[in-house]
Length: 244
Image (cartoon, rainbow, N blue to C red; front, side, top):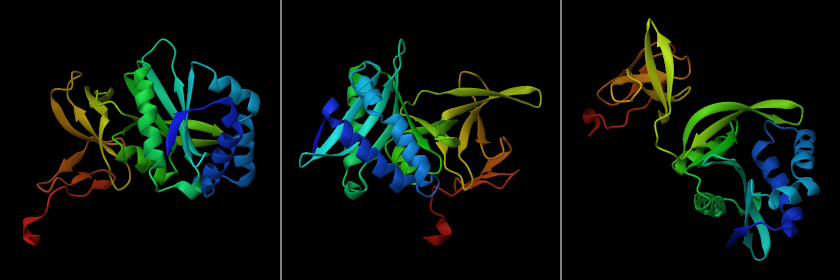
């Protein structure tokens, strides 16, 4: 497999891979007309030519046998050392062969070479495979936003590869607690985030349930976390001695 930065002669292949990838990953939430409209808008030739040659956009393609089988599309933000991986598309016929992992690795390397200290990734909330991909590569979910596709809006998750605490203040019963959006644990309904009693992130308070936005949570000796308000829970991280 060869991985390199995209050239303008790759435009037709990039468009084709994006179309096949979107259909394979999102056909359960996007109809055919919506996908076609998105491809026509995002990967129009003139627009792609401009983006491929722009310093504000990075396209990295993966080739096998001379054919483009995947690509990443990233946004390099001006005046700040941050970059966003907007899409990683892999042709459905070439999935499960490490193409996505190789693309992400080279993309991160190139963005770091461009002095980006923090890298974020975006994936639609309904794409569980895409969300798991980022989690399995050390990214943490830190936010949610809305993405416009065609004439519709969809929930999109934001991931970051930085371990730096991202503390969000919450006023609770006359005091302020701070949620670290960069330190999460998967719950049955939604993630739990570590919470602190101080803005420096030194005095650990407990866990915040993002499903119902409650701090009324508890952890037992098996490291199971449960929200006492909505029942959201995390499975235990340790073996129960009674089963050994």
